[in-house]
Length: 141
Image 1 (cartoon, rainbow, N blue to C red):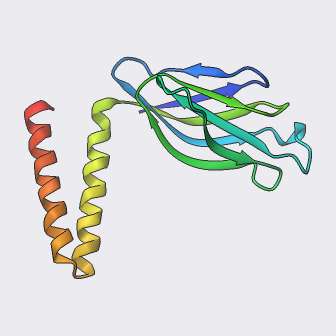
Image 2: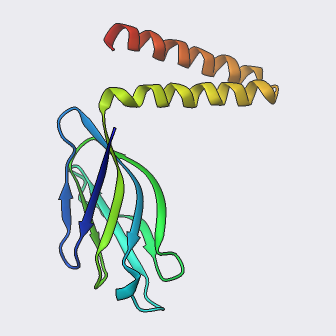
């Protein structure tokens, strides 16, 4: 896992693309407060892959100059915004195969949650998903 970050300058949408075999995890978007008016909102958008639609991923302001995100990109994406200041995105870049342990950990967490709360049907279903995921990783890992 390695640090990843970009600056998107005003009026210049920026294309970003992970290296081959990597994913980009964007975990934060922020603005430079020194160049933003007190009542100004900065809208940050992403376009992903071949999709022509722009999706709002952040609504930044003096009151909220940064937003935590949890976005994963495995192909080219474009970041744009409507401000007179730069927008900064931070996160990390990881090999595709490093994502699997985190996915399995999430499944185990859900199993534990449902087990504690007495939902045996969900617990059995999630256990089966975990088993199949582990088996898949053994064969293709």
